[in-house]
Image 1 (cartoon, helix red, strand yellow):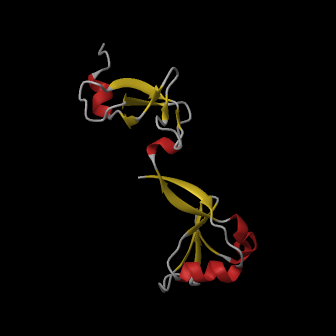
Image 2 (tube, one colour):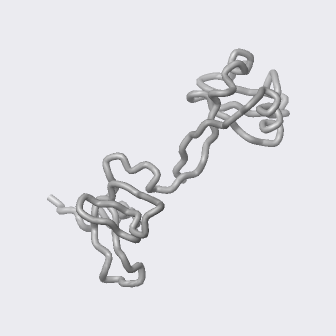
Length: 136
């Protein structure tokens, strides 16, 4: 799974508390913030980073807290990804290798390469890359 972090959109500490009690997990930098009734913690509101800490000082930064959301492989194409591309997903011989540089969801051919656009794309697997790489 690939994830990205987006602002949680918290409007108040009360909203943060309710969402945590309901099971949502937040992040502040590298720290994970959550609610737990586990007796091993000193407070039910936990912040875990390099070590367990009390949430106290982080409450004032709740507007900066983020949540983790699942994203697609094409949500972060910085530098490009080696892919199989095609305009006909059923044509087994119509797939070619290209570096996909961008994805524009509002286009009929959303996958952008250096010289063209494609309707379908999927990243090459490590095995496929190894198969088509020159062995020295």
